[in-house]
Image (cartoon, rainbow, N blue to C red):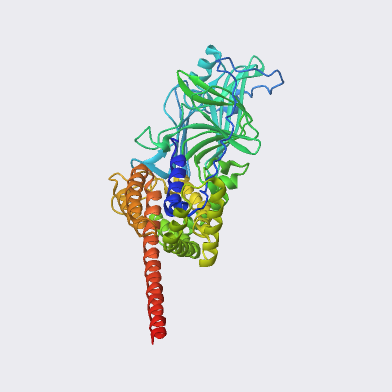
Amino acid sequence: MKSDEGRLLIAIVLSTLIIIGYQVFFGRRKATTPQRTPAPAATVQPKKQEPAPRVEKKVPPAPPVEKIVPATETLKSEETEIKKENGLVSFVFSTRGGILKSWKLKKYRREGKHLEMVPQGEPAPFSVYTGDEEFDTWANTSTYSYTQKGDTIILLLKKDEATYVLKEFTYKEPYQLISKVLIVKDGAPAGYLLWGPGMAPISNNPKSQMEKREIVYLSGDSVKRLKETKEGEILSSQWMGYENRYFIALFFSTRGKLLHINKKPYLGVTAPEKIYLGPKDYFILKKIGKKTEKTVRLGLFWFIGVPTLKAMKWLHDHTIPNYGFAIILLTILIKLLFYPLTYKSSISMYKMQKLQPKIKIIQEKYKGADAETKKKMNMELMELYKKEGVNPASGCLPLLLQLPILWAFFSLLTAAVELWQQPFILWIKDLSAKDPYYILPVLMGISQLILQLMTPSGNPAQQKMMAILMSGFFTFIFASFPAGLVLYWFTYNLLSIGQQYLVNKYLKTIEVSHETSGKERVQRKRS
């Protein structure tokens, strides 16, 4: 699996198996991890660069130019930039082609400047596409007449009553435009409003997972995605958009098309009622509604990830205003929550370790036996477990119960825009990017090695070999993960090492106490 999510799943499952794997040799069946059934791929119509379909229905006549351009102004042939600004965004429309020239998010920065959402390329965002080259050239290169009414911008390009383009946009908090777009050709609606090419970059590494771009849309109650290399019609129940990991251009329209123009990918939409250009912030999108929050990839256990994300934001806002420390504090809380389960697991694994000599005697006794005879061996093992008060599954079950929360936390750490470009300390300048010097992954690998060597096992030599191999594997696989995720795993390992140390010390005390009591009983009998 190429995605971070796939590699995370491998890491979590392997981590669990490392801790409980030795119990496999104690006569229990090996636990299997159920695999998620991949969602069916969205279907698009065969690739075909056709003119946009025309729907024969009545359309309103084009408004007079005099209503768009005040009589006191002269319609200029040269380009005019219409600039607007508020607390969240600054944006620029151009009368040349009626395009969106700039949309900068003030809360987010790239290379010291406000993050630009508008991708560079021709045709530009909010251009028109019908498939008729003459009409498209006229619509995308001519100068529109315009007017402003408060937060509303109206752009009009008119050839006659049957051929015109009207674009009306009203800004609405947060990051939204209430829109009205009419593209009329020969008296009938035609064409698409374009977004593209692709998405503006948010990092200096085009191959980074955070730069992965896809078309996303709502189909029924499910979010589906298309690779931008495809082409075809898109039918949505509510909305469609263009996304990368942390930001999205959303269009509230039920019909669109994934196009390739000049060999570059574009999303074309028909008559969008509203447009959202901003971060994939779960709580903002939740307020906007229509299930747009589902574009944030919180994974299979999203219902756990949402309250966990709320907790992380609360810790950031009410304790230390640093998401790195918020991750550490939340990790401590999760560890405390699971302490009874992990303690029980450690005790069970210790007891199983002590039973190893007796288990091996029984296994040697039935070595080479047929299947029917081995049933007796299993019965004898179960009698041993019952006599010693040990449940073979008790070491595995508590760890499996933790997986949903661990997996949910992993998913939100890779999807939360809150971590994008957020610094921690010293060399960690961005918790959403990998550690540039690989210090955290190396420390995490060392902590993983120490933890595995401290975990009870029936075969110390095999344990040491597996600990070294798996620690090296974890260091390699985590090297490219976001620093926030590695910080979580490293913190969790440190807490687990401390817990295992206390458990081992406690068990050794009990063992010494039992040995002393046994010697005293023997002495009393002799005397």
